[in-house]
Length: 293
Image (cartoon, rainbow, N blue to C red):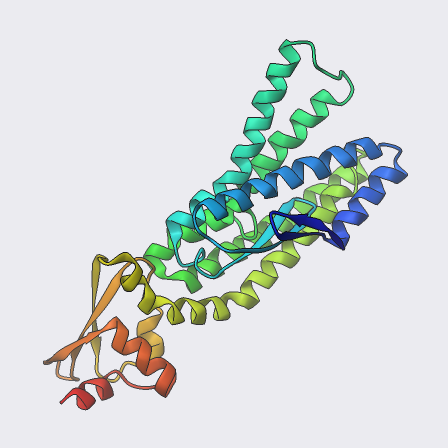
């Protein structure tokens, strides 16, 4: 459901967020639902502004029960420092709102009914989003940290699976809370959506991997200088096996050995990526040395 545009970026509601507002309306506390909407929107706009300042394209924003999703250009997921800074912007915005609210309270600008709820929602949204599980902000930070060690694709799989685990745990606690009249169904709805979103991240991991490879050659062009990472491989190893080890913000050189472990030559990352898109995943590395000779 389309809400409007902000700085030329389309802002939309997710249907589950509408359902969550409906629950608050049915319970007679719609004003609390509107507070959640405002806090979530400000959280997501903070991500958007941070991404813009970092030179990342923002396509649109979708407001979700636990925060939101800003669809951005592929450059962010292959640039760990940028993804970390953009991901931290949302929780930091919530903490800033907490500080401002406490300041207003000291000047007498405070609602005894809604003020504590506003503080609670900001603190809960910041804390929940910092859990190390995709699609939450903490999951994106975890992926960025892991990506420099194991590559974007494998890091995405780890963070997304953690997202599914967190969602199941939260749903279980939410159901217990509902049965004991300690919380409402909103917790369960949020957990369901986190599980769904984490599953989507798993499905998109292969596409993210291909996009990462497609932009790999541009990293050196844009940076000018990158640290080198050397790998050693046998000539019968396929391109698929070697590119899985490529990590962002580094340029890889592959030392190739024959089956008797004798040195054959050196292959650059650019050559591997070119061969991958030309010959496919199962092309042996040894063929690249033969073509050079």
